[in-house]
Amino acid sequence: MGTVSAGIGTGETSGVDHTFQVDLRGVVDLLSHHLYGSPRVYVRELLQNAVDAITARRRTEPDAPALVRIEPPDSTGDGTLRVHDTGIGLTEAQVHELLATIGRSSKRDELGFSRHEFLGQFGIGLLSCFLVADEIQVLTRHGDNPTVRWTGYADGRYAVTVAPPEAARAEPGTTVTLVPRRDADQWFTTATVTDLARLFGALLPVTVRVGDVVTTTGEPPWPTTPGAPLDRAALIRYARETLGVDPFDVLPLAVPEAGLTGVAVILPTPVNPAARAGHRVYLKRMLLTENADGLLPEWAFFAHCVVDATELRPTASREALYEDTLLTATREALGDQVRGWLVRLARHDPHRLAEFLQVHHLGVKALALHDDEMLRLVDRWWPMDTNVGTLTLAEFRERHGVVRYAASLDEFRQLAAVAAAQDLAVVNAGYTYDTELIERLPVVDRSVLIERLEPSDLTTRFDALDPQVELALRQFLTAAQRAVERSGCEVVIRAYDPVSLPALYLVSRSAAFNDQLAASRDRADELWGGVLDALAATAPPDRPQLVLNHRNPLVRRVTMLGDPELVGLAIEALYGQALLLGHHPIRAADAALLNDSFLGLLGRAVPGRE
Image (tube, rainbow, N blue to C red; front, side, top):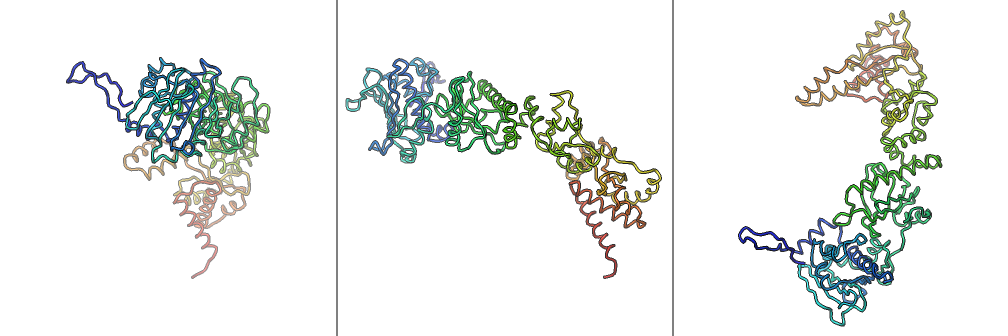
């Protein structure tokens, strides 16, 4: 176990082969810090070797016993941990090949231990035990051959002898004895060993006993053959006991090409879509990891899977899944099954679907961005906020024809009430994915008409004033424009509903772009300032509008003021109110204008000397 043949000649002695000298302590340190996540894997590796040995024996002796018995240090009496199995055992030649060689697979193949049904690899698996032990002893008997004793040490030495009669095994099989390291006692307590045996080996098809406690539970709680009935109550109990959740629903999973069966637990509470769900994965009934990543598509963050597979490949540490084409195909197949569950829910249990959407709408909408069937589901079932009440998109189209939408929450807040007063129904598409989903609808159904609401579109629905009235207001508009000129907006006067609204501040998309460009130019350095100046030169000369409502009594009274200074203060105040009511951002210049108008009007309202 201390050397590996290199077969590389040196430059000084042509034709002479040398061997690499392997520092086993260095290899163990590499394993503990960079390959394995925790020393606890030693229990898994011992179980894997034992199950492989039992599997090999039962290929020729189907009725051979299938038992792994673990004796923790406090039951052995000498401070060691022993693992006994009823497997096939090894001959002396096999001991040398399997236990004393790291990284060589050809002999392992010849001996039959690389077959599909086996879990691990003897060499690297047993090596992991040096994470917690200074010495490992293996007593093994194959058939009628003598019992062989192999003893390995953490410094790379090993010895192989025929066991004396008092130590010989009476039956075929293997006993592995670990002498714990002084700093690893916590990994050898009876409670810890029992918990780890139950964690890694609960579903193994053999009996695992730690002391007097059986840690295996037998068959998985989900169907393992196609068409088998689903015991929903058992799966819900399993989810509560194993995952600590009371599931919204449970969904059986199967991917035959991956040899995968299992269950998807639909989580009962919202989860962060950005947090990748950890899935519980078994390979050939041995726990691989409790936090597998990438088993489901990212959109299915509302599901937590527990699966067993025979064909998926583990990474070198056997603590994660290897990313290959089979895993990619498996991920797609599992995603299709979760998607099918949603579609069936929509068809057969709409009330239950509505409950699910209230909890996990983000995941469904994320899927609908790429999946036509899910988009149809969202279109029909997901209630959206509009200025005429809460409606699904399908209901909105039935009532109003065109799906007119505000692309941001601020736009909707600014325009919803005014648009409703003009009999203009608008969908609030400012929430996550809503704009993208609405804009995808015509791709799925060409009969769907959509239109993004442009704030300036509202002015085309306002009533123009009588020409004579507008002419009489020319002087007022000049004074009003002068009052807000520094804010960069244009003052116009129209007649519109609701009458209670004195003024409306409207910003078109091009005007909003110009404002953002100007704000960025103020913060940019000389280089980027030049780039932004060039963009500004090509931007359309569009300005926001302060639209005064001539139907509002207060506005009409302001238009009749004869004092230009008072007109200016009133317009500044109306401008500030329009910004606040429309949820527009308040710039420093706007805040100063609001302050000046407030103090100015207050000063005019409270005349007199100090």
